[in-house]
Image 1: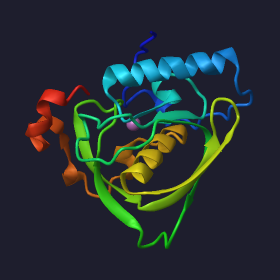
Image 2: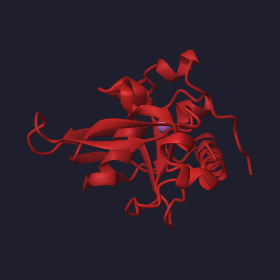
Image 3: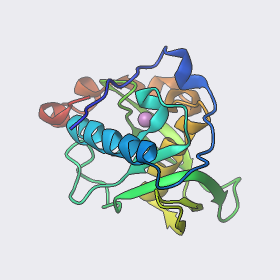
Length: 182
Ligand code: NI
C-alpha cells in the first residue's frame, strides 16, 4: 500500500499539460499505477489522474467494481487504466452537451454542475501497451472527460458555465454527507 498525498486546486502543477508515457510495462509505470489505485481506493474516488499525485504523465484510472458511495446514482463504469488517451466526440459537438454534477479529489468538499459531451470514443493504451478503444456515453463519458482534463491541466470548475451551481457537497447534497470523504 502506498497512499499518496492528493494535490489540491491552487497547486500550479495541476494546471500543466502532462507528458506521454514512452515505456509500457516498466517497473516505474506499474508502481505508479499501484500507488494511484491505492490512493483512489482510500479516497473512494471515481477516478484519479497521475498529476493529482504529482506525476507529470498521461496516466488515468477510473471505474469501480461496485457502486461508488460518492455517486450512488451513477451507472457502473468498468475499472480501466488509460494511458496517452485521445478523445473523439461522437455526434454533433454543438448540441451534444449534457449537464451533470461532478466532484474532484483535488477540489475536496465541493460539487459543481459541468457541461460534458454525451457520446465519445476514447482510445489509448493499458499499462502493457495494449490498445484500448471504446465508444461510451453518459456517466462513463463524463468520468473519462473529467480524468483526461487533468492531463491537459484543466480542473472541472474551469469547465463550468454557471458558477451559481458550485457549492459545498454537505449543503448541496446533505443525504450524501456520511459518504462525503472528499
Ligand atoms: Ni478530478
